[in-house]
Image (cartoon, rainbow over all chains, first blue to last red; front, side, top):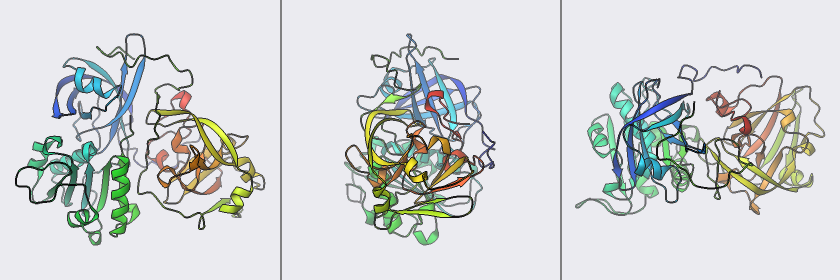
Length: 252
Length: 197
């Protein structure tokens, strides 16, 4: 096999196996848990990257799943937010059974396409999240805040109910002149919420995102149906396909 | 370096020797794409194979189907850890496409509507190992799954089976395609877990 002729992305850490020890698990939403992992060998990761978790049973049986990394964490620590899938094999264990002190295998960091890097220009960045698809987008918003990057950021977050908002306190804390947070509630809104409750519409998307004329980089993450619909609407609203980055849950 | 994670037993099932390491069987068909889904009408669709002389060999949709469509049943393995077994496809064997193409080059870059690319050695596309697929699960391919036509190279991780395929360019070296430039393996054998480089 000949050596690749490009070096794109090679400045990032190489994917490798790591041993993670659970420091803390806590409820993130009624169906999801936040996992704080101590990973001494972890080199840090770019905002939006993901990793593989591998679990081994006493009889040698193994199961691997990919998860977005919830923040552009410093070296040595990884934060995940895992949604429990009905009938899942790995996510119910991670959400319900994992305790501080337990150990997992991680492989990563992975992914150099669906990432945002500080200091890459002044063009605005529009994030569009559906449900737990907010995880890698939260990582981007946190990295943007930590770097005090000048690019204007905006997150449109479609979520079922107020209880289902991931990183609610952190997102509220990031909101300010450089980061606008727009929530769309699809089932139930807080008391006194001024907007209609229901599925995201093309009109709401147009009203609460950076206009195409401002040439934002757009990152969309959610279920396949959500991403397909939003990406189509974005193109209808004038965004170039090359400016739209998408990521979907794998369905495992 | 594997070790047992306390409390994990996994779902009890017989080990399936048809699943490569690190893969989990799914019944649905997950979708992964880097950007918006292109929508290409078969009336506008065209496949182009370009050799080192710059000569383009072209097939319209009807010309492709006229080469002969065959039914195949194959297993597919996605790098994101899911696999499907005994999946029914219809498509045109790449042996038929390459019958009239003369080239000394040993590698192919597949190009898609929407700009996606992926690199594959020519020998992995010949001898009944790869197709231009137009149907799956008994129905025309949905755009989100790569319709109207995608490459089907089931013995490699599924990102090599380029959705919305529109062209194959012969190349002398194994240059990386889209995901390969972002760290995915140049070859991608699921049985060797060649996921990343």
